[in-house]
Image (cartoon, rainbow, N blue to C red):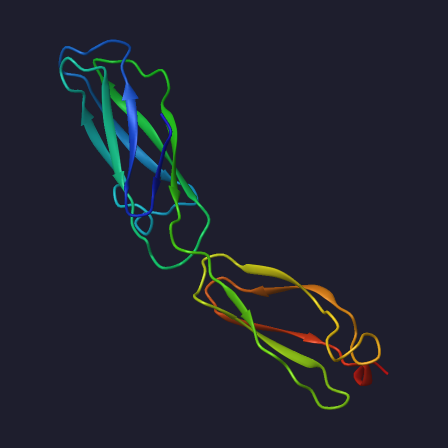
Length: 178
């Protein structure tokens, strides 16, 4: 069956037999990378499992790594059952999902000032790096400066690339526009 676990826990795949086994039932398994990569996200690539006598289920536990301090999306891998002994495989594959538990970074934006005819340069800072791009939409809003007299009204997207903690964006002042 499919399995899901948080970073640092084991993905526990349950393999079911149609009836309790007597003895001598074994199978191999192999893990194929998806978005989860060996050995960075999980630590076992293959192995052999022996069905406990009298039982109709066996568990394949795949340890995962982390948390690593970087926010990321959930990652997946595929387990494939191979080479059964004294058994027949009806469903050979399942998906494992490793859920990220690292917090999403928070974004802060600095104030900006500009000389005449120069754009306002705003610095973006993340609380910590992320394994995915941090994308946000910004919109200018009148304060003491008024659009379009003092600045160009702007709605746009800014990006802090994966692995980085800073970026910037600009807003044109009215003097720089004319």
